[in-house]
Amino acid sequence: MKSFFSLAAAQVAPSLALCATSIIASTNLAQAADLTFNWKGDAGYSASGSFSYDETTTPAIISESGAGATKVLQSLNVSFFNPSQELIGTNNEVVNGVSSNQFFEFNFDTTTGNLFGAFDVGTGSGIGDVFLSNVEAPGRIFISPGATSYLYQNITADYSQLLDSSTNQIKASTVPEPTTVLGTLLVGMLGIALSSNRVAFFSRKPKKIYRTYASKV
Image 1 (cartoon, rainbow, N blue to C red):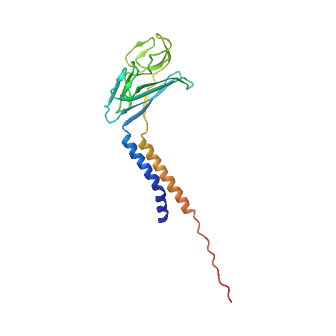
Image 2: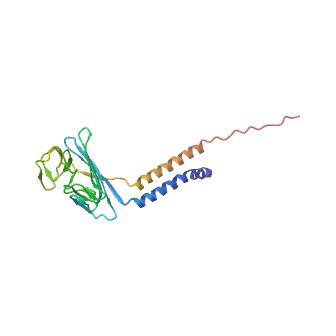
Image 3: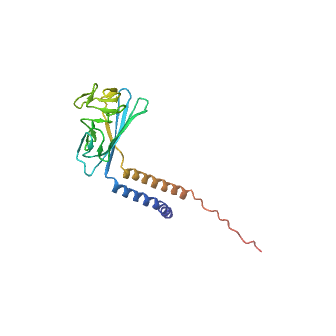
């Protein structure tokens, strides 16, 4: 039995060393918190996106508004889909800490993981642009942040068509950190390796030894 564990350790050691190195490297680099958000309209339209920020320097509340350098957010992108799940619009709202949307509104509580208050993403400044907002009611009437989110598409410079709306909450969720994923893979690799060696060890059959006898004179 001792030889089995020695053999298993010898075979698994290189993989463990490689995974451990990757985990350490990822831990040193993983300073950004990555999250996704999703919204579903009553008519079947939807929006999904992601955003990131430096979790080592970010305050409890993130509040961003308008174009230019952001206070906290490092990136934010959003994509919009029709009821057939066909892409109808996409926008890299924040790139390297700079917002390109003059109507941008974003508020996030890092302690609860909830979006709150004013929310307006998707640019909405050009013809054909799609945007999601809870501060602009139909007819381009700006309102206080409400429970209803409206999805629009700009048809002309003066008219935005309402595509969908819903009181469904815009939900944010954390993307698993690389260390968590690598740790899971590490445990899985270890289990597979040990299992393979155990099968090989216990399936070994002893060789048959045939004795030969010298013929009597």
